[in-house]
Image (cartoon, rainbow, N blue to C red; front, side, top):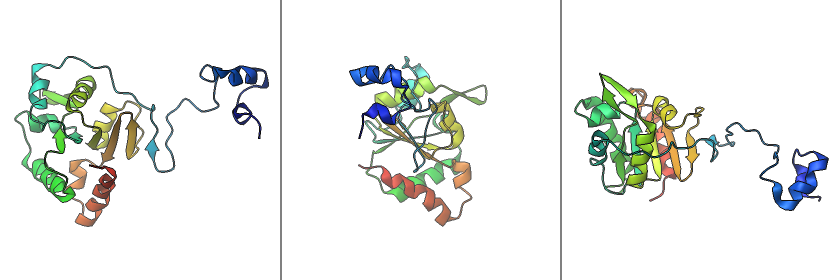
Length: 198
């Protein structure tokens, strides 16, 4: 069958080095760009969470609104408004309907924004988000909308699921997109969350 190096794109003169255990220093023949498998799942290592930071009082305040140790953390771009006194009742009602439909155990869903409001706009703070996620201990993140996904994963390329070990990012349409959908169409998106195990 030959060695593993025979199946890689490694020049013949470098194969003895590869066989001696230096495979991590030599090219493997795989591209450096993020790759998605046939299921549309972006592979681990394709994106990395930013370094952790010390949370401000405002971030500590929004973090305190989440249940302790949720399995799933929900986020969307406007969540900073909704958690900081500028809530939109339409978004809130739709999100409650979605979570009720899923019938997940009580306390299993937490909420953490990708950024907080400043001057009437949401200012993305991915490092604060990932620090908060680490504190919450949630392993699955439901991200409603591509705008929020791009904040959390700088090389996000439109996948429905992104593995950012030890976290899994489940990307669904935004609440603004889910709202006007026919119930059947909305359920097709929500059914993808059945992969989350409790």
